[in-house]
Image 1 (cartoon, one colour):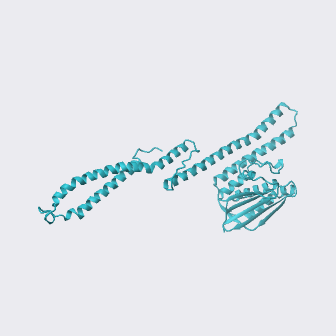
Image 2: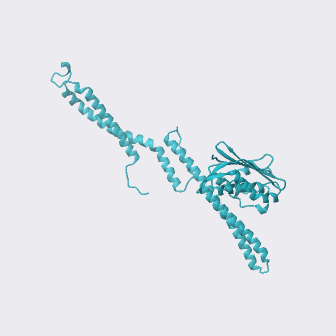
Image 3: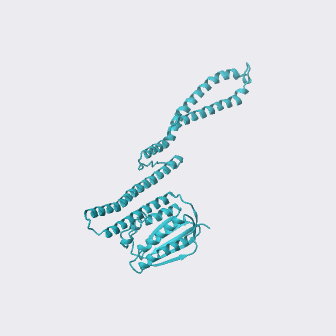
Length: 359
């Protein structure tokens, strides 16, 4: 933004300091005049016949007062310039850090030393902002790179199959079409997941009152055939649990949680439970499933995009695109909630979602 040149803050503070000091000196001289000189007799005998009269005192006092005023003004300018420089030094460092960040370098930190004051509080807040920005940019760059790779893979597979079919006209066309359809479906699912993730990250959705218990029942009913196919016992418990948000996004969140609990379960004879309840001002959803033991370091990465948790039990037909829990995390965050993932000692995972409740 273009601005007309003006006085620097340091010069303004210097003039303010000098001006206040000059005013204070003038007030002091006025006090001397009001409470001392005005009571000195203005006659030839002076005060009690032995002290100088007002005329002589004024002639003697006025030059010294003028010199003092000039000294105060100069002292105010020099001292104000030095003091203003020292006071604004932290702001200069903050400005330099802001310019560095504006040039694309987010790794720089101010780390201002000293005791707490307004400037150091601003510097700490700026460091926190830079840290969050750097983390967000790094996450977005990694996400973009992973998304590009994931989208390129099905396209490359399709291109390879088409090239093979072109070189070998006798190849079974039905098999080719079936494989192309599977690859194309995977690409569509990935694209829709990316669009949903971007939409939930932006948080531009209409909020309405949603009963999470009904959402859980709908998600469970939809995925019940998958659970029965895999021999998983699916239970939905709890009472009415209301929150404010997007019914569509919350249904996708619940569906992803239930599907994740079914797919990443024991090969046979597994169980999973969806429980909803209101706890004070929070609406809580717990999704718990059986499964193989999970390393804590693996659980910490499950909400990152394209982290599929390859150490967990799963089948190829439900390999997914690696965005299930990432979408859940994004939706929960967009609804001002929290998401906790805890590995169960006996194996499997306990997922707890806490959202703001409504009456």
